[in-house]
Amino acid sequence: MKALLSPSWELSTEHAAESHGQPVLVNRRTGKAFGPGDVVTLSPSHGDALAADGVRRLAKTAHL
Image 1: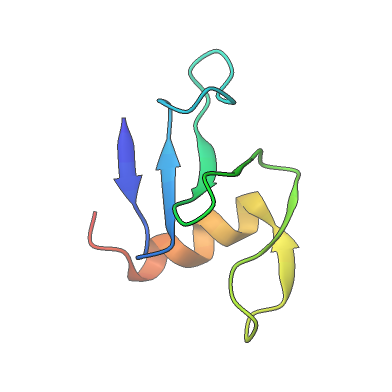
Image 2: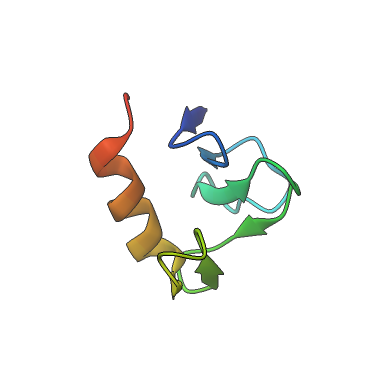
């Protein structure tokens, strides 16, 4: 499963970092994956956030 959240981010269970079916947040430009407790910078204007919070923020504007 892959869900495109923005041009730069997707939620995926197909990345090697996923664990037991739990999706990870993947930076589409770098391929780096983040678990729910990892700190990510979604964009310079948003600053740092936990990946779980970033997914919630991105899902509000994504066309899922």
